[in-house]
Every structure is written in C-alpha cells, then in structure tokens.
Image (cartoon, rainbow, N blue to C red):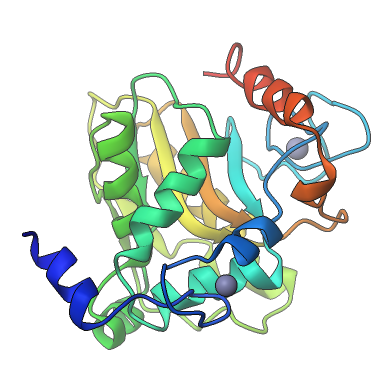
Length: 246
Ligand SMILES: [Zn+2]
Ligand SMILES: [Zn+2]
C-alpha cells in the first residue's frame, strides 16, 4: 500500500474549500469552480463577450497565457490551502484542473515563477514549482527552475502600478543559447506584472518565446459560471486554443 493511501486512512482528506471530509475537493465545491470557458482573447485567455485576437488585458512580453479557473472565492480557497495551508498534494489536483481546461503546449520548457526567498524560507516550498512538476508529468514536458528571484517588498495589497514597479528587475535567468520555447507556471495571475517581469528576464537571457499557464486568473471581466455553460460550448473553447498559438 502506498504511503499516501496509508496517510489517507489515518488522516482522511477534507475538502480544501468547505472542509467536508472525504476528498480534497468535494463535488459541490468542484461544481462551484468557474472554469475558463466561452469567448476569450486568443492571446491571453481573458474572457470577453466575443472572441478577439488581442486585448487590453494581454500582459506584455508574453505570447500566450492560459488559466484553468477564474479567481473566485472557491479557487482562492484551493490555492491558499496549498500555499498557506501547506497541503502540497493539492498541486496534483490543481494540475488536473489545468489539464482539463488548457490544451498541452507544444514542446517547451515549463518554468515555475519563483517565490521570494523570504516566502520560500517561511513555507519550505514553492507552490508554483509543485504545480509545474505535476504538470510536467501529465504533459510529459521538462521542468526547470531557471529563474532566480530577489527579496523585494510583498505584493499583497499593492496597487497595480506599485506591483509593476516592485517586480520589475526582481527576476534573473542565466543567459544560454539553447532555449526551447518557455511556458511559465504560476498559481495566480492578477495584473500580469509578475509574469511580464519573468518574461522580460527570460528574453534578456536569450529566450525567444515565452508563454504562461496559471491555475487561476483574477479577471476584471465578470467570470462565467461553469454550471451555466453547456458541454458543447466548453469543448469548443478548449479546441479553439489548440491550433494556432504555439
Ligand atoms: Zn467542498
Ligand atoms: Zn488578451
């Protein structure tokens, strides 16, 4: 019997959103997650009333962004249970949610967005790296932590402008000449300034193509509730992103 299975017998999992015993995510909370669906920006995945090629929400320096979930309270609970609650195996569940909604990128290197050194010391792990490794196993893609992050001010509560200033120059990657296309992996995207700063560092190190995949995205546009969408509509959205962008 696997150790994880044994641990489940001793400490049965509880839903990361509502605490109901039995599974890491109960059926009710799973149904409450707002998955990416409907018309969107082909470049950054932001939902719009009609499909568009690019939009004002596209972060600079990044070819393509895809998210699995809109950052609703349920998605926030999941992400925080991993990040702040230390429930590391939720990285597997979050990777499953990404795989169910985002088509696998073509051959590329998955690069997790690094935590600040202070956050890494406090938590003992980088949640984005855990999700990236779980994704790498599912998509059969290599994962490398090539970005280094300096200790800067925390972003929480900062304005969009302050965030951009705080993270600009916070990341560094060693120059190399053999870059595959890079797909950044992170748990949450808010303004996109962190991803843009990472992309800037990768471009400075010689990388030519940089995209990103995140678990949840805070969109200014109202999220589309998954339960209100038909299966056909959801499938069409997933396929629409598969063909041209990578
Ligand atoms: Zn629940
Ligand atoms: Zn866009």
